[in-house]
Image 1: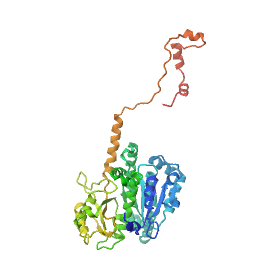
Image 2 (image 1 turned 120 degrees about the vertical axis):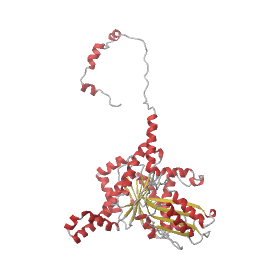
Image 3 (image 1 turned 180 degrees about the horizontal axis):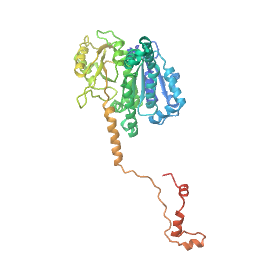
Image 4 (image 1 turned 90 degrees about the vertical axis):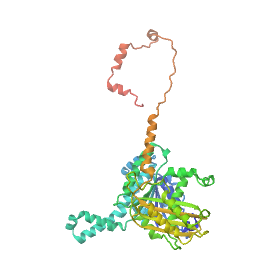
Amino acid sequence: MTKNLTFNQPAMDMTMVGFGQAGSRIVDELAKFHTAKGQQTYHCFALNSNDGDLKGLKFIDPKNRISLELGGLGKNPEKAMKILKTDDQAKSKMNHFITKQLNTDDQHVIFFAGLGGGTGTATIIQAIQDFHNHYNKPKIEQVLKAMIEQFSEETYKEKKNEFHQRAFQIASENFRKLGIVACIPLRKDGPDVLRQVNKFAQEIWSLANDVTKSVAWVKFPDNQFFYEQFTKLPQSKKNELDNFRDYANKEIAKTIHHINTAANIGGTSLVLDSQDLKRAWWEHQGCLIIGKQEVPTALLNSHADITKLFKTALSKSHLHGNVNLINKEGEVSQVHHAGLLAIIDRSKDFGNGAFIENAVEELHEMLPISGTVFSGYIEESNNENVTVYTFYKAKVLPERLEKGLVEEYQQYMKENKELQFTAATIQTIQEDATQIDAEAFADLGIHLLSEEQEEVKNELSIKDQLDGFDFSF
């Protein structure tokens, strides 16, 4: 990322909130960014189930690191959800966190979590609902109350649905909007994780598609995607990172920050400005699909090559696998607004933006657009690279999330059924095979029971039998 873009003022002021370890580590990367004046670019927060998991954070202000003091939740989101609903202290801390500590002036808030664990998966779902109930639902009630006073209670009773819809429409213009970044796990994390992720991803997607809620978009970065990308990196690049998760966190944070700062520079004949970006990201609902291509300037010969980069970026998703806008039945997922953004290194002249105009035409050919296409480019020092971003929202999901997790889970279960499981046993030490009869024992004062006596002994009451029963199997 270029120095200018790193320290530039963002197009959108945003609050970033990390839930659980995975979400908090991504936000910690975003907390690194500062403006040229030395101010932290974003308001950053982290919430986890215990103090220990927060200690590894380096850049989030300690006063913005909140522990539920539950001692960890064992990577079990189902258990975590139950605790959050029944533990009064945890509920109180969650409520205080959402209603008091996040009380910034930012109209745009992004929640981050990993879906493979316990704390992040459970708390982000609870937080989405709490956020809407605290910040936005009262705005609907306020508008509705004013409408009833204006038109009378009798009219309201006759036209309740109309009143509610209109109140929501008016109030939603002043909503604080939520973006959700929910990371899906590795394939090798196993069937139980895949099952729970599938369940909770459905809940998040349901909330994201509920027009009465605050969620403007959801993004599902894929750790399997990052792992495979990480293995392809040159060793020199790998040496700069701790592991593939470190690579994933940095890439997610950099992508959001790069687009947000590039849209606030201008200086060319075609500009994608802050208002354009706000409309593209925060109007309507759906899954936010981002594409990215970056190549050395020296490999590009003309403005037509940049148009080709945009086409490639539109056809390949960034941060997760590809999506299908057309299903097997030929049904098309509607695309709302879309954006095209290029960062051109100043070392080479590519004209006055003809590549953007051509890319817009290509976009209309490739996507079923129902809204506006926002486009622009900037000329900055960009490490002698050309970087292009594409983004749009649609009611569509990454292939792996849409059906891949189920297939992976089914494959795990199939393989398990084919395995022959066994239990470990302790071998018995064989005694001397010499036969000693009952009379020999009797001479020693030891009496063996006859078969008849053994049957009598076995006729004990059920209670006596249970008292001596071993329940450890």
